[in-house]
Amino acid sequence: MTDAEAAQLADIPIFKDLPEGDIAALRMLAQPTERAGGEWLFRQGEEADCFYAVLTGGLELLVRTPNGEERLIVHTGPGTIIGETSVLIGGQRSASARATEPTRLLTFPDEGLRAMLRAESLTAYRIVYRLAQALAHRLRELDAHIAQMSATDGGPVTEDDLDRLRRIFFTDWGAAAHRRSV
Image 1 (spheres, one colour):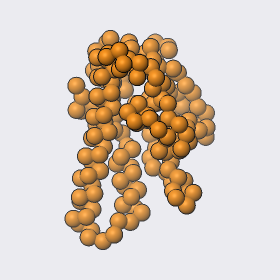
Image 2 (cartoon, one colour; image 1 turned 60 degrees about the horizontal axis):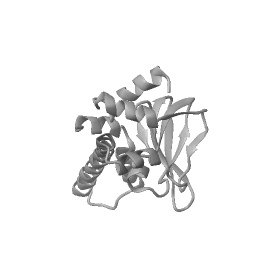
Image 3 (cartoon, helix red, strand yellow; image 1 turned 90 degrees about the vertical axis):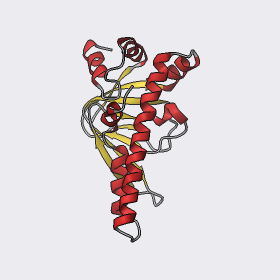
Image 4 (cartoon, one colour; image 1 turned 135 degrees about the horizontal axis):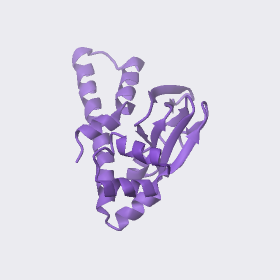
């Protein structure tokens, strides 16, 4: 990892203000990755074995509907963490990610963080705690939006409503997690 990538890592909202030792541990885990515009990072249904931090460029997240159509959820950019649920629950990717332009990322293999957790590393617990905070914050925003939709609309949930919920869940959660960080 270059010095510039290491500096960018420390500025990612979910990792911001972590102790220097935690950032050093993340640097040891991180593997630089690049994707050209239009290139897939991962596809929905693939086995999830890592999460990513976007350093430069952008990604679009897409979900395949039951009828096979791919729908854009959100466009993400620098500072975004994606694929983090793999660390927490494993399994398959719930969405696809494709670069919209040349994109540099850091890949964090799940096994490295899991090994740190097995060793009862405080650093690993802080990182997982921040990931969980971010997911909890997104769920809280979704709950509030669902309550608002049902209180003001009274009608059935439309595809536009679902699109708004998807955007809430997948947009800029790193900054939200940072506001509530340790």
